[in-house]
Length: 242
Image (cartoon, rainbow, N blue to C red; front, top):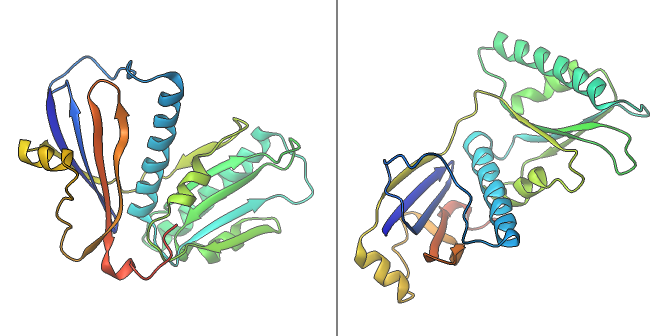
């Protein structure tokens, strides 16, 4: 069995994971397989946690406080999903053209969903602050609501909201130009793992504070516990992390 240390850097957030695996990095094992050691319920929770973290990392790599979470709707109109998607796609094309003219790429994370009564399709979208004037200019309807991204630099709750899909009617889309997290994986030393097994804390990176630690992160019934740590710069310590 191999032991690995994965470091993931997403904007201000640094995450470090220690885990065991029967697979050696760099070797082809014929594609990804479902973790047979997990019960269906555990697998569901693991998939949910993974989706939230992946979305959180994507937000942190591309957006920050001062950017916006926007809701776009067509008031008092009952539209089919296809009709609304055509409206949203036309608006995004105009946004891309507007950004191209100012020498930038239009970055966004969006999802469309329907109201509880099966009516009122609408779109939520994260955009940079420069997009605000274009949002109002090119959305041809009155249904616009802006919410500034908060300053904590974490955005887990926002990622949870974006990925939650109770009714199965949410459609998530992202710009192709989005930056991805910086991920490095290397073999972990036996001494590191032994310290973790004794409950010892790893060294906190200089200029950071410990945000979260979890010794049951992605628990596997065969390989046992993995260890997870998340760090933010000291400048974020004053904010309400959520």
